[in-house]
Amino acid sequence: MGRLLIGLAALALLALLAATAASAAPGDFDASADVLAVSSNGTPSFLDGGLGELRFDDNHQGLQLDNVRAGYHGEVADIVHFTVEAISYGDRQSNPVDLTQAFAEIRPFPNGPWRSRWKLGAFYAPISLENRLQGWRSAYSMSPSAINTWVGEELRTFGAEYDLDWLGRQRGHDWELGVGASVYSWNESAGELMQQRGWAIHDRQATLFGKIGGATSVAVYDERLLTAAGAARAGYYLDGTAKYLDTLELRALHYDNRADPNAYSDANYNWPWHTQFNSAGVRWTPSTHWTLISQWLAGSTCSFAEYYYDCWNFAAEFLLASWQRGPDRLTARYDRFDMDQTPVSEPGAFNYNQNGHAWTFAYQREINRYCSVALELLQIDTSLSPRLEIGEPVAAAERELELALRLQL
Amino acid sequence: MRLPYRNISRFGSLGALLISLLQPLAAAELTVSVVDAGGHGVGGIVVIAEPEFAMAAKHPVRTAIMDQQNMQFVPNIVVIQTGTGVEFPNSDQIEHQVYSFSAAKSFKLSLYAGHKYPPVVFDRAGLVVVGCNIHDHMVGYIYVTDSPYFGRSNESGQVSLHDLPVGNYRLTAWHPRMQEPGGSSLQMTLAVGEGAGASAVFHLAQPLRPSTEHSGDKRWADY
Image (cartoon, rainbow over all chains, first blue to last red; front, side, top):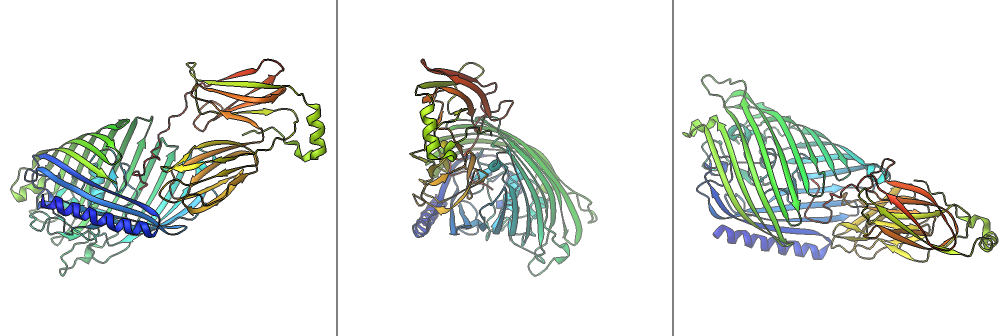
């Protein structure tokens, strides 16, 4: 309950700050608070130093503050805009209030069908097709897919992104196309959580100044910053988007953080993780009521973990079907994922691997523009070999039932 | 898009006067119905009757409005006669940046809220697609026609056009979400005679493509 009060106080503070900012300059402010009633049989999660794949375990049931968040979008010039998104979690957050994104966007008026855009700051790569609500939250369920859970907990672009859009609809065509490229750095810790714990499903995004992992963690070496870096080498991603009217959106992205695993430093105890992957996805909205989303992501992460150069391949995919009518939305999602160490270079070490699948069923009802409720059932079945290191069975079937109340401005 | 009606103002005021004296004084009412494959009326369809004969130009006298509410253009389809001004007030709490680079009209309205700009005058016939540079999902359509005879079908799929001079007309039915074999419009010719009002029916072979935008909800964002 104490955390709940802290969170609500944080929301009040954020609202006050945003209102002050809004009175000074026109902009778009939004805020929300999610309160949950949780029932879970999950094993201790990575937030508690465990290897559970859910956010809430059997020690964190009952009334929980999921998060209190606020976002502000404003303009500093006609073509220069900025977005700041802040969040306060009710459980195990190193900073009471922290940021998840903060970036400026330069968006000149198009003079023809081609338009350039630049982003500078800390923001998400264009991977998720389900995280469409402000605050990079899923519009279809409380907990995003395994793919987008991992994007939220380990990936952030600290750098610049350039996008070139072809605005076909403005020319009377049905298609719009876009390509983008990004150069970034300071995200060389991406891959560590994947290697240690594999895929998970929860709505806990890493924050820009917060730490990931539990201080008492057994399996995850140590809590560390999202920005923990070795040599801070420049990484890149290239992406493409195609949209057909409001009906179809296709995305593809190639990511390589180009981290140098040789840049390990005993001083900060951070291993750079060379992480690269490809992702692709499609969102199809065939009618007013139905939305279908599928995403795929596969890649590898490599590091000199414990002085042995090892790599882990990882892959995941999901299929989501969502039906909406008026204030009601029903969503079902199936996730399938795996992670596998190859090769195992340390003599006698066992293979770190994971495979599993998950079902998510969610019902959301919007009571009014300020209030909505949701009921969500998550069932995740995994086989995760690192559990042997902490004396747990390799296989686990974790289940979480959430009743959520969302208040929003 | 074919816009065959030729404004005769190029003949000068004397020419216009002569032609207006020569053309029939009789005026008729034209009722156009738009129905789907099941015979049910389809609302919201732009219907235009373009005279295929020379007539004196009728100059538009009103200003149209395309508002911005809840991050949508409202209405998101406006049909106007050439020369009409359109106001783009912003009723949202947030600023928008309205623009178009369509061949029929190119314009930019820098960031604003409320009623900041005078009406934009659309002086060429054609389809003008309007967007917001901040919110890409906002799309509006302004159909500019030389003809003074136009309207949009009501919920029953009907539109009535008044005071049409006797003669031949090209009728056009258009909607951005029409998906007919020929595209987003249907056309036919029709003779409007003296006496009883004329009528015409457009049969849509395909239902309108469903609108799947979430643009009315500010909580949706582009990531």
